[in-house]
Image (cartoon, rainbow, N blue to C red):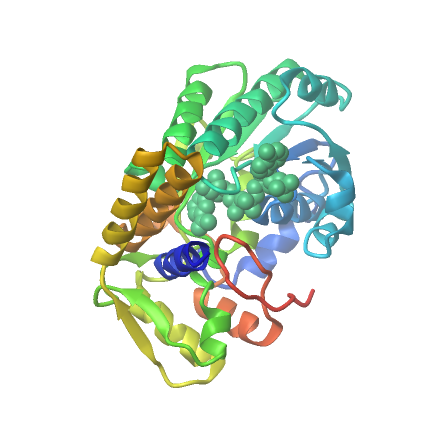
Length: 359
Ligand SMILES: NC(=O)c1ccc[n+]([C@@H]2O[C@H](COP(=O)([O-])OP(=O)(O)OC[C@H]3O[C@@H](n4cnc5c(N)ncnc54)[C@H](OP(=O)(O)O)[C@@H]3O)[C@@H](O)[C@H]2O)c1
């Protein structure tokens, strides 16, 4: 019973774990860039997928949102407003023939963007979605004659020791090995949602949890709006094609301690830190893994993998420093200041509690 909240706390803690303001002018310029072109987003109901749909509609693309359940997307106040202006199509990305027939009805497709991702990151789900469903989307896009394919991948694939990273790498190779359409593989560092998971607990007076001395890792997370723009622009910018593109936001390297200080500044409270030892991860993971090996239970194997995911982000930098690997205008402090007032969406994998987000 206690395992899930504990893993979420560790994961949120571990996850606690984009170039300035000419961007308004740049955004205005881009408003008509998509006129006359069709852009298809798979995983349109997800955190990055829905922002990508919103930006594509704003840029004037005929935008197709592929979702697994149209009624769920339309009835979810955290999703529906983002998909407004797009054509929402329900399809099963795990079924190649149904996906092919869906895409064959759309007419010429300029850009296909995959924002598909397993919701849990555990092995079976990762190979089903991050590999197989994404591969299905590539095959269906190819047979529909799409011109360009953009993959939302992850910076952490650089140093893979998790199952979902292996599944993503398997698909990345498949995409690189084909020459039917041009491609871009975008590997973002961290999303804002992944470094905001402790907002509500801090607001309630609990300490901000960090690992080691809080200086173990550094990151420059990227805002979903900035990332959405980058993903779409890959279809037009030939310099971003045929490549793996590591991508972070505009911040300087932020340690966990720095993120905590920024969060306290946003909520107007004095910092109160709890330093969790890193060995806690190994203790928990090792014991769950022993139980998994003893019982052969998949649920325990998955719990151990979830622990490893938490540990990964507690010990690995999610950081880009080269100017061409930094993008966007929204800083983490701006994001914290906003969610401290508006609240943020509940996400079962990164937040334990969350107030509804104001639109
Ligand atoms: N979190 C981070 O900090 C971070 C950093 C860098 C890279 N990334 C990578 O970014 C990617 C996307 O992340 P995200 O947060 O936008 O993902 P997300 O919010 O979890 O969205 C995943 C999308 O995939 C769909 N999906 C999942 N399982 C499905 C299934 N069985 N059948 C049909 N559709 C399914 C979901 O549909 P439903 O809405 O119907 O579930 C949703 O549209 C991931 O690959 C992640 O590794 C994440």
